[in-house]
Image (cartoon, rainbow, N blue to C red):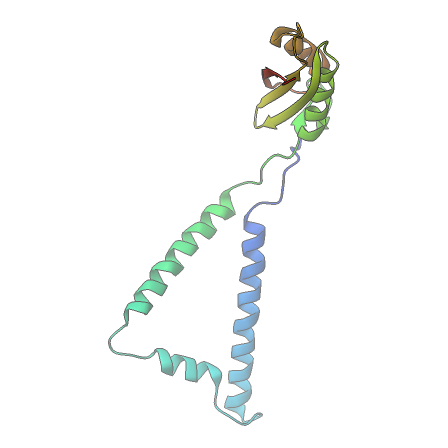
Length: 173
């Protein structure tokens, strides 16, 4: 069974929109040039005036800087075009095609930590392949990191294959 991974839109999507807007702007320039060349409108061609303004035997430093910036922007666009979108959900273990959001795993982990004895507050944080659980312990409580790790591990078993780390600190009086 092939799984289709839920992903965000690739970064190249936004560059495509910007490129389309730039092409639309160039089309306006070309259309105005064609209309001026045919005599349909009064006034000179914007395209010819722009080219005349750029025509200089000695290129200025700004032309060089603009060329370098355009080359770097082009390389960035190419990298973005070939970079896939990030995965938005985590695969559930098993043979089914089921995905769970990282926020749901965080909520389950926080709830499991809070249900452990002596824990006042729990918080889960999923980053890539790691689940980090922070727990605030009641002053003088005998709750330990091992008990919290076991409770969270039992709760998320089968949902996602994540590395679990637990941090617990005692709250103030």
